[in-house]
Image 1 (tube, rainbow, N blue to C red):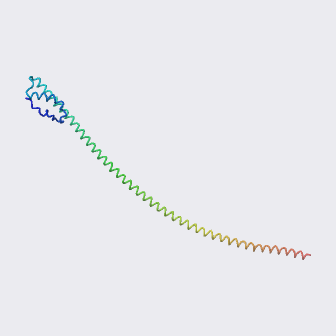
Image 2 (image 1 turned 90 degrees about the vertical axis):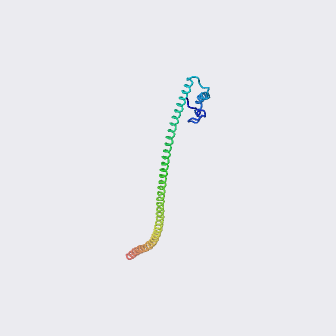
Image 3 (image 1 turned 90 degrees about the horizontal axis):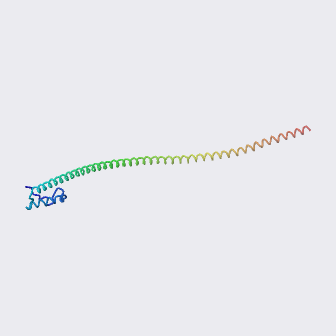
Length: 185
């Protein structure tokens, strides 16, 4: 005797009714056997048994395909999770590098600002020094000009005095000549 096939009648198989189209002829034949309008010969029962075997094979094949798909899905999910972990690690590493670069830039900016501050102080000092030196040179130049003016006036006085002595000598010589000429006469 064949086991009752009521589960096939309800469409309840491993894929929840997805194989119902294959089971329809079998269900119809099984109903005929159950209702008493069965097959009179063994060939009909054999056909049912052959179909049942084919269905079991199809369900087994479908189960194998489903198992492979589940394995592929789990493998894909594991690979995705690994990629997400790697991505997270790379993101953290890049954030670390970015933070260190920001710190390095801040240190360089501070160093540059301190150098710039020192440079400004040096420029201010040089401006004061140049100003003082310029004022000192201006005073020295004024002193040289005053000294030159004084020397120039003294030189003129000497020149006049020397000129008067020279003139006197010329006058004396001409007077001596005249006196010599007069004595000779």
